Length: 188
Image (cartoon, rainbow, N blue to C red):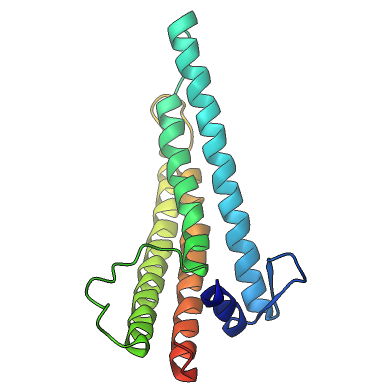
């Protein structure tokens, strides 16, 4: 828990009295925290809606021979949007899976530099994904592509991925700066 408190302190977060919840004192950190939390909650709501839809479709198919039309298309679109919505939250809180097998023997300072490199890589890849996905949404909009069963415009779910990737990129930059700041201050 002390590592989390240290991360909050270095990222400009102060502990709320007795609540155990941090509050960011920097406006950029606060904005990233709120945006990533909002996206994560929306991703959770999407997954809950998909679960309900799936249950209704399965029950309808088995009991009444009346499944939800296009449930697979909706599941594919919703899953992509929901899963992408969780990524910025994982990045801003540094909850991605790490494999320490190759870096366990390194000093804490060297591991901090490696963390910064990994966060910069996430920032770069997420930025590229946001850019290319936005271009794909524009192209899909101009071509008028629609889904097979529902005739739903495909540019909408594609465009809904862009904010998640953009926020993931910003979160990667933020975490890279945090890791480098942590290494520079010698608090590793």
